[in-house]
Image 1 (cartoon, helix red, strand yellow):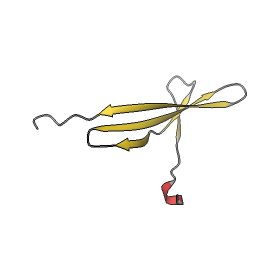
Image 2 (cartoon, helix red, strand yellow):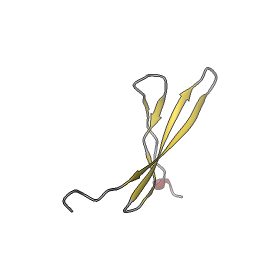
Image 3 (cartoon, helix red, strand yellow):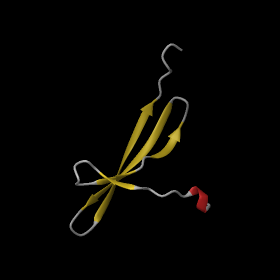
Image 4 (cartoon, one colour):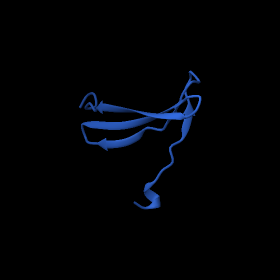
Length: 65
């Protein structure tokens, strides 16, 4: 893996202010589906926990097609 393949994940505060989350990372995409990973950072008193959510989208054909 070269340095050009590595991208930085930007952290943003959630509206609740309790956790922060990162940009969605595209794991797999076909003409019919898309799978992304969304990282969440949960602060605790002595450490920060990393949790991820895997989201799968089903693509639909455009209307009037």
